[in-house]
Image (tube, rainbow, N blue to C red; front, side, top):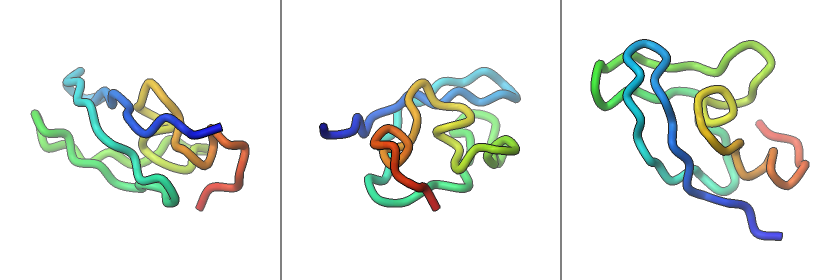
Length: 68
């Protein structure tokens, strides 16, 4: 199964939504909101910003592999 690489990330500070391409073999720990410039970090227990704020988990998690 090939993981989905496109996710919509939603900023918890301002609600701005942005479609982004996720890295296929790495976690993205930081993400700056394109609208309000808030620097997002994963929530406790999540490996990356896509798992915390995206509509799709990161590719390693989709494939049930260890992430980070």
